[in-house]
Each structure stands twice: as C-alpha cells, then as structure tokens.
Amino acid sequence: MKLHVALLLASASLSACGAHSSQASAPSANEQALASESASFREATVQLSTGVQMHYVEQGRKEDPVLVLLHGYTDSYLSFERVLPLLPRSFHVYALDQRGHGDSSRPECCYTQSDFASDVAAFLDSQGIQRAVLVGHSMGSFIAQQVALEHPQRVEALVLIGSAPTVHGNAVAAELKSFVDTLSEPIDPAFVRDFQAGTFYRPIPPAFLDTAVSESLKVPARVWKASLDGLIAEDHSSRLGQLSVPTLVVGGDRDGFFSVPEQQALAQALPHATLALYTETGHAPHVEQPQRFVDDVKKFLRTLRGK
Image (cartoon, rainbow, N blue to C red; front, side, top):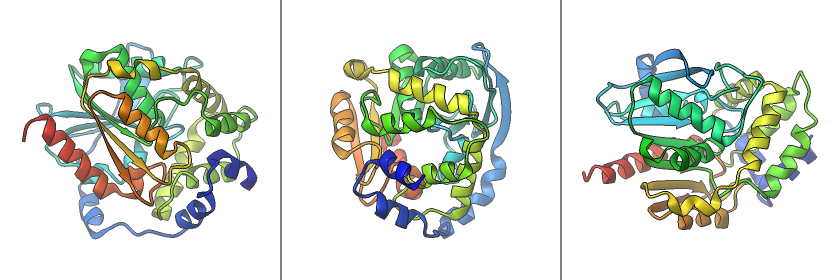
C-alpha cells in the first residue's frame, strides 16, 4: 500500500509530503471565530434535469455574485470546509456534491467530464442562475473547464486549483488507475487515508483528514473507476485557447500530481489567466493555505468588477 501511494504521487517530495501532512495543524483564531458562522449555510437537495439528485450547501443572498465550488475526485463539498467560513458574505456561494459523490445520487451511468459539466449547467438552471464564477479543485477544475467550453455563456470567470491542461497521459493518473481498477467493496480505509494524506504537503488538522477519508469512503468502487476513467479520457487541452473568461490558476510547487511546468502550461494556454503558485504547498492549496487562498480569490473577483 505504501509503495503504491509512493508510485501514485511519483514525486521526490512524497516522503516530505507524508511527514508534513502527518503533523497536526490547529485552525487559526480567525478560522475558529468564523466557523461559528457556519450555521448560516443552508443545506438542500435538488432534482436536476440530468436525472441526478444533487446535494449542496448555500450561503448568501440571491442578488449577490455567484460562486459555485466544485470538489475533487472522491471528495465532497466538505473539501471546502476550511474555505467556506472565510468567504465574504457578500458572495452567493454554492458548494456542490457532484454525481456519485458526497450525499448526491450515484447513477449507474455516466461519469465523463461532459456528464459532470451538464450537471453544473442543470444546477444553475435549477437555481435560476444565468452566470457564475466556477471554483474547481483537481477533478473539479477540469469539470469547470468543460463547463466553460460547452456552456460558455454560463461562466463569468474560473478559479482552477491544483490543475493542468489535461489529465490524459499523466503518469500519476495512470498509476492511480492501475490500482483503482482493482478496487472492490468494501474499499480499504487504509488505502483511502494514504490517498488523501498524500495530496497535502503542509500540515492540516487531523479532523479535516478524517472527514476527507469518510467522504471518500462514501463513494462506491464503481464510481471511483468510472470517474477516473472519464477524467483521463477527456483531453480538451487544444481548446483552452477558446476560453476568454478571466481565470485564476492556483497551484502548489510541491503538488505530487501536477508538476509546476504543467501548472504553468495551463496558465499560458488560457488567454486571460493569472497563476498564483504557492511555495511549500501540495495539491490542495485551498486546504493547506485557506486564508491566503480566500484573499487571492477576493482580489481576483474585485478585478472583475473594477473595484
């Protein structure tokens, strides 16, 4: 198992990553204070036109600018748990459990990037939202790109976290697939913990890691397989130049999935992109440095509105 995770992250920094992520990190005083406001989040489920019953949380007023948060592979909306309390209440925020994940329905079919993107467009329809800023992490970042390509009129801007031009041909994803293809029920919790812990370089609160593991264990083996197959199969990198929306690319220089050159290539391929590369940070900058991430998002969104 440990060998597999080492191969999975395929990075000389993996040993440091494991050492760092095993350390406890207490929430900051600011996070603790703002966490008390989490009761303002509204939790709901909606039946989408795509057939998916989608679970989500929401905060803010209908007239506020809309942010839609899209989690990564086998995660849930709770992957934004360290970010949600820090976001200004002047934004209308939706954090989704995507199909097959979290507390949303788990259809037998289908899990391509286009299927996930169709769910996002259908969700916007269900809420009467014309355009939104999409904030996606890892798998969610590729889904956000797909939404912008297939439904460009629905996207005001993009924030892409832990991303690259494509997963197709990525050696780490291929190694992960070779193991995921062998999964059966019940999925080994030790594997899931190694998988989740291996994505972080900086220390994170142990309770957050426990939640991430619990959420991943909700995902059936068939969805682990189908979602990863869909992620690897799609390659829209040659079309990224068509995306004219402002984009903030946020990455870590210790990301074990996507190298710095891959992250830089994404920013260069997008006509209106800015790269924020965090030092000593892994695959989940929004988890490892939530306050800095929120500050960067606020600054980015202010530029959209000329403030």
